[in-house]
Image (cartoon, rainbow, N blue to C red; front, side, top):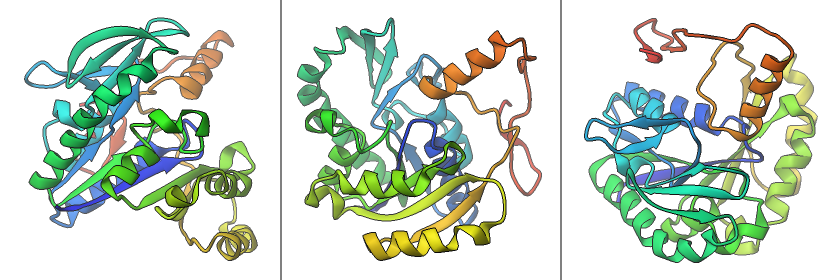
Length: 272
């Protein structure tokens, strides 16, 4: 079995998709055969693969970062909300059923083997698979039916990187609290933290980073700067609400753009 990593986040919109894409792109540049994976994605923004399968747009973007074609196995379960309480369940790119939020838990035992087989298949074909979590691993009310976060990490024995959004404030409490609410077997898999969306003098973070390491035993591997203008497709949730709020205030919406470029200046990863 080849290498794999799970990128989790303290919240939705913490930057999991971008960090996953960045890791994929960096590994691809080193000549590593890498693929993205997201076990379960909730989004109305979907992409269609060459063979007609429907997956999350983030995984299509991440596949582009890897320099490979997107496949259904990269996002085996896609939930497309029809309302606050119901969603269409798309499995391996094909609609399966419509369920309520309350009934979805009864479906997850059927979906879990599909998810695990999809990840195992990618790991056989690629050197590394970078997995993206969903929402937050600290959603302990959903842990028993979790397919995308610590449920996946535990099943596949994946190390977990937790990304925190400092732009929202309270990043150290979010990182510490995410680890603290997990049970010991889940905590064992959390290897390190990343602070995302930082604006300012990074030296000011040093005391907090050192205290976080002292209290958790986990290092903070990096502080990623705020990057305006990425305009990646939002999967929904907090990012979608923010976009709606901007439009409601009358701000000019973005119509089309070349969105994410290589540092080397070649073609954009998305928007092409």
